[in-house]
Picture 1 (cartoon, rainbow, N blue to C red):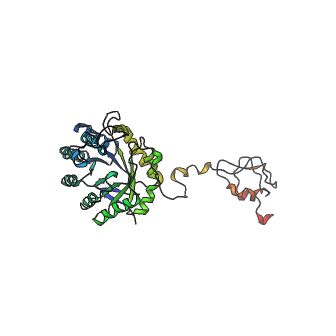
Picture 2: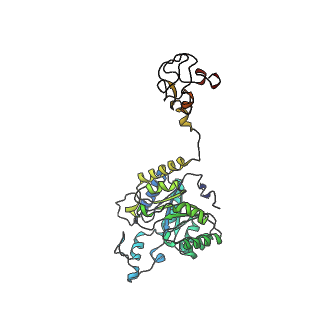
Picture 3: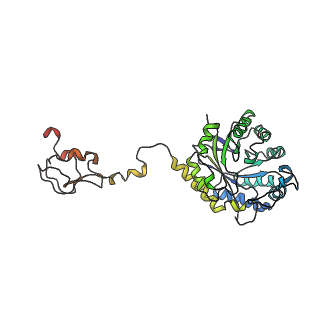
Length: 355
């Protein structure tokens, strides 16, 4: 059975709460801690619930090698080695504490994706309230075990993982003490085409794996994220930058602050629009009931004259008999003179007993 909600840093997350918006800072600091701080400031202004870092170094996530296996061919980072990319993109570990302190000062939650055991240790020292497992790391079961043992909630991106690999990851987390799990549908492409996102996977994951679900969105706009809310996504993660033309490793597929603000507002609106199953009139409809169709006399009818399609019609407004009574009243006789424009009622016409 899927948990109704989990809590991160005092914020409840689940179907009965507005979507939890994570601003992924990733490599968009571009080597400048002040830029990283400004992204956190803008995320708070935009209404995001959390900002997320990535905790690794080029030496912990890969190794320096001239082998072709370590070179990137094609895509956004074509021509670089893994070592070069991560050396440029990594978040210096000495930045973590001041960034955590700045987030606390601003009142926005901050946590990170650790990529090895030493990263988990660092984040534990900083009392991170949750952990994120990146899509490429979902197959690293020892890392998931180590994170689960912290006792903190865990958000995992499905990405390239098969069903069996997701089963292994979720089972490993649960067997090591973590039951507060959110699984994000994700396409590990940068950017990723919306048509490859298969959002219908989101409710299936909730049922299949017994976890809360959400979306890690690498598309270039907000449409996919907004649509995911209708399918049960209770977490939305999106890369955020100050300037998409900033030249950093992730800038080109990230949201700028104004776009993040729209994401926060539009996903909340989408969640509010889901509401509940309802066949009753809503509050905004109640004042318009009088403008529905009803039966009106459209030509004067004398006492004793028969009601016909010529002198009775279904029109707006709605003060007369409901249109469903039309066939019943046609052919009946008027009990009194009825002026044109009169809302038809049963006390104006012959009853069956009087026929």
